Image (cartoon, one colour):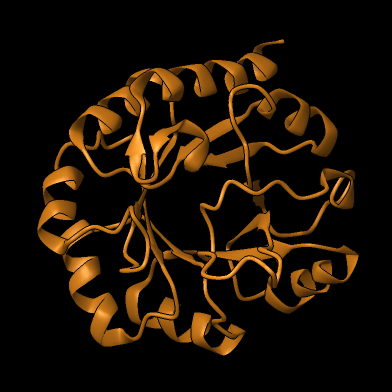
Length: 218
């Protein structure tokens, strides 16, 4: 079993180097002003230049229009656009035609009914990201990166036709169990490797990658 790791919300060189050194396959860069992990285009371009060619660059956006995406794609030159908003399938089709990039659509999961979105997006997205849905009582919650865990049994044994990745409250202590329960072949972490919102901890990145990749080795 091969497990791939995505470290999302990279904001500095130390985190980038730690993630690459620890064996991460994907690096995520956030372009959403409400997030503590939001990057300027200048900072994104500087960091992108240091990403090895074998590591996949992912640009996370939320309901972004073309005027926002055009300079972002030029600055970061991402391999994947990660869509964390309410983008309909038709919007994904437009983005694929305009940018020719792999598209990852986040599917927030709070209950079994949320899995209905898989059928909606499986032909529009190249990848799905199962993430925790913030409860309505959580005022001001971000679309992702809130450190929330959802009930993994909801997707245990779930095998959509579209490749998928698991996210939502993962850290070095629970990622092994999450992988074993769901059969996830790719995992995504942000707040679970931070010492403070938006501040990645190189040691936590190392521990997370070791735990996730250790499941594969085992």
